Image: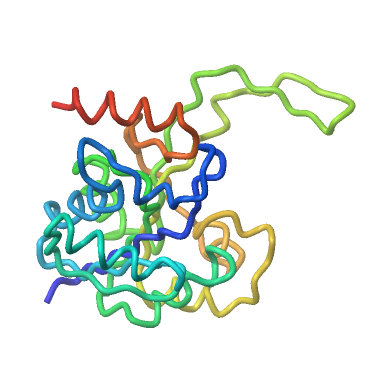
Length: 223
C-alpha cells in the first residue's frame, strides 16, 4: 500500500460558466475533467489511495459517467459537505497514507514535477503548498484608498496542498471559519508553518469559460 493518500475535491457547480452542471464533469478532450485529474495522480503513483469528495446529489451521475467512459482507476467517493472545509474533513477520516495531497478536481494540468516537489517538501516540512509568482502589478485597496504593493512579496496559491497526516487531521479538528479559503489556511490557524514550493503556470483552476478554453489549449499542446 502506498504511503500517499490523495483527496480530490469535486463539489463545484459551473454557475460562472453559465450552467448548473458540475464543471468537473464537463468534457476535456473527450473525457470528463475529473477523470483527467484523477489520471494525472494515478500515473504519478499507481498505488496511491485516491479519494474524491462529491455532493450526494451527483454521485449517481458520476457512477454513470464512469460506466460510460469505462473509467476503471480505483478510487473511493465520500460525501461533500456544506463547505470545502467539511468535504476535506470527511475525506481525511478515510485516509490511510502518512502523506496527504489535497487537490482541486478542476485542476487537471498539474505537472508530475510539481507533485514530485510537493512530496520532496514533506521530507523536511509538515505542510507545503505550490505557488507561482504574480506577473501582474498589484495594488492594495480597502474600497476607498489604494496603493501599490511589491508583487515579489505575494504569491498565487495552487494545489495540491501537501501535508503529513497527523498534523493535517489535527488542524481539521478546528471549528469551521469563513476565513478558511484553503487547506493551508486551516493548517496555519492550527499553529503549523506552511512551506512554499514552485508550482507550474498552466495548473489553473477551471472556474470560467475562458479557463476551460485555456485548459483545452494547454492540454492539446502539452509536451
